[in-house]
Length: 407
Figure 1 (tube, rainbow, N blue to C red):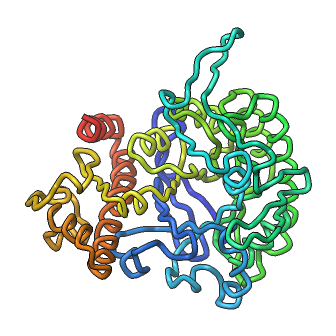
Figure 2: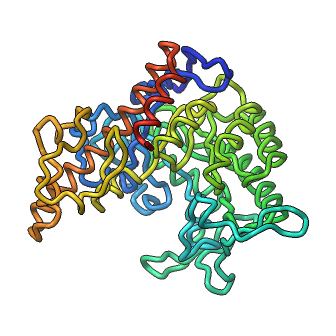
């Protein structure tokens, strides 16, 4: 069965430590969930995830939809993946945007890259634009989303019922309700329309989930997903409405500017019930995790640690760096790190040589070592934040860590 207990809260009443109990184990929060899109984390086998002290894995319900019958036959995602620990799947809501209004777009959270000026009424005009309707691969209706599979070119459809059926076959401990993610370029008026649709989909998701949540022999839980863009009235309204529904927890989603993250989380979490966990979708950089933890997020996920590792960007206590600049360098990856790569004594020069060798086998070794280093960094950060809250030293730890990391 699924449950959540709060251990200690920050003075602001939002941030806290807790324990999420799932059928496949406990998650001590705040916690970072590693991303295994297709049921496995790229370049890190399950046994190494355990060594990294990862607590949970997030997989993509949309991408696993065609494999879902096979996963169900195997007994669910935890067994199928070999991870055998707590798991979470998302609904496919992100793909609604990425195949539709956001197709071919690079969405940034940085205002400097997005701000185009100020309108006459004083509101912000963003540079971000949506993909033309004729060029989109996804079409949103009240029923659900018609889309063209970008890999096969075949037409397909996912609505709340289909998403719940897929996720219940995959059998993660935690699922996300089907939602519509709007883009930064969408207007307030469209966000109102999309939010009404998401709230209706939330009710349909709950109803369908109830039918299938015990199909694999253990209770699968469902989180409602909060949208509403960057508008306070929409965020608070939907938090109240979804907070009154029978969800087991909540996903905090949406496209917004980085500097607005704290306010948006505060608006949502001041309205949501305290006794249910909250998952912040798609963020993992240290400043975002500190903001998330302080403003009441309990768990996090993001592909960035492994994706950036594959491109030579590594994390350290003193900030990010790119291995391209460290030819033959004897410097450690991070002198404060306890990952397997650092314990084995690999240097920045060693990893750069593996990366640039041209030997496919050596490159795979690089991907593995760089990935476990970055993932362990983020996992360890959430462990340290948890400890700092319990010890009553959160503000002190946050100030010191961010000063070292961002200079």
